[in-house]
Image 1: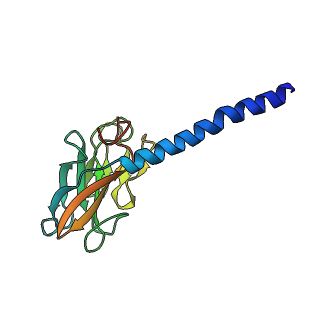
Image 2: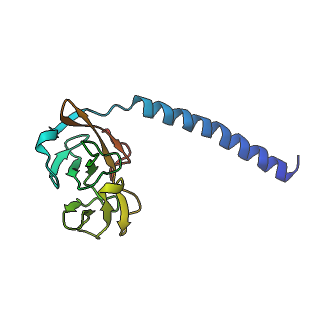
Image 3: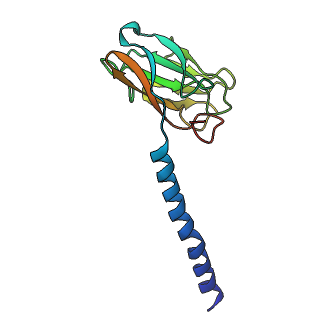
Length: 160
């Protein structure tokens, strides 16, 4: 066996078992993750441009619910205009705030700006990821949070 063949066999042997174990572990962890179902507000109480602060998925996770003037990605409500996000900026964890006049979530620390109508996508700034979106549903006119798309800043997992 020459040096090139030795390296090919060694790399293949090292990568393949790890990849299959990682895939299996990821699938198992996703299946076993259970987010709490939390009542956030009554659909009737959320008028246009309402901003409501709550915590999700636990007490140390600030979140914000916004009723936009337009439909939002993954939104709920009559026109899919109600969305929610983690308030922890994906850059350094500073709490973002909704600016009604700009219709954006803005971080006061380094001015990263996120679009709540477009799944929390970063518009400008130093953040490298979108804000984690809180998954919402309407159950008998109650808006409920039931999951998170994305990883909340400073965590290895959203459920601690």
